[in-house]
Amino acid sequence: CTKPIKTVELLEFLDRLTNPHPPEPINVLVVDDDRELAQFHATVLEEAGMVAKAVSDPEQVLSLLDTFDADLVLMDMYMPDCSGPELSRILRQIPGHVSLPIIYVSSETDLKRQHQALAVGADGFLTKPIEPARLIAEVGLRAERMRILHSLMVRDGLTGLFNHNAIMQFLEVAVANARRAGTSLCFAMIDVDHFKSVNDTYGHPTGDQVLMALSRTLRLRLREDDLVGRYGGEEFAVVLSGVDVEQAKHILDALRISFAGVTFFSDGQEFRCTFSVGVSDFPTFDSPDAMTEAADRALYRAKKGGRNRVEV
Ligand code: GH3
Ligand code: MG
Ligand code: MG
Ligand code: MG
Image (cartoon, rainbow, N blue to C red; front, top):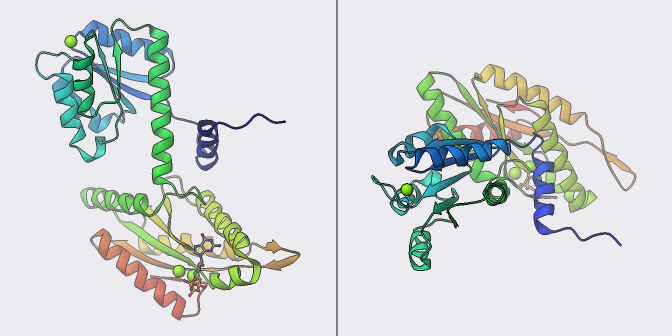
């Protein structure tokens, strides 16, 4: 009899499966007007393998969070310029920090005041002085759990690729970056050809295998900086930064040829599958919406033109 798998273990396993890179160290921001204590907590966490930044001025927190991708904030409750709850309230109004875990570290032992502080949207309370081992465990567990939740939120369940919302958000960021840097950028929409007949002929589970094989091909054959998402159903989207439309066409054509050469097996039968691609570029199309619509129109032309091709 095998040991039952706990939900968290299963989620971690799925996360590793869909996330081929080794885990990044946990990033923690420690905010305390007591500079020495902030530094001590940061050192404890660093010695446990995390990356920790200590700040004693709450005013620095927002600008620091712009460059430091914190998994969690350890926050003092009483600071002269801005209290912990005030700072938490400000953080919660910023879309990028809505789900950032905040744990108070304070000598406040009054339960009512602790609850009031938590009510503004914080996640936990640790009373000073805190044992180093307890600090490491609390921070590590919460940050890991949040990472798993976050990865479930942005990834597609079947393929492990980014989901529709995530890839569209990436496109927005990529367009803003390209505009600022004056570089080019391409958006590709990929749609499996006659996929309905794959399902009808070989069954839905085999169709799923095709989608998983295609997502593996996309992830393995594209550069690490290229973002790949499942746009929906049997449609995929790719954001290629710093690439012009001719280069994108070349890259996607190579992918198309490689995938068309893959043989699938189902119940002793062999079959192959192709896909069609529509590509648009920035700056020819100068907003995420315009790029999506242009790629969609190009995809339509690729289908009309006979499928198994890339259209710009
Ligand atoms: P075309 O070449 O014009 O794109 O034809 P098509 O058959 O691929 O297009 P259509 O949009 O008619 O069919 C898409 C099919 O994809 C229908 C739907 O059942 C199937 N599909 C969508 N999501 C999944 C999925 O997650 N798994 C499987 N197996 N099938 C899916
Ligand atoms: Mg204080
Ligand atoms: Mg489709
Ligand atoms: Mg299709």
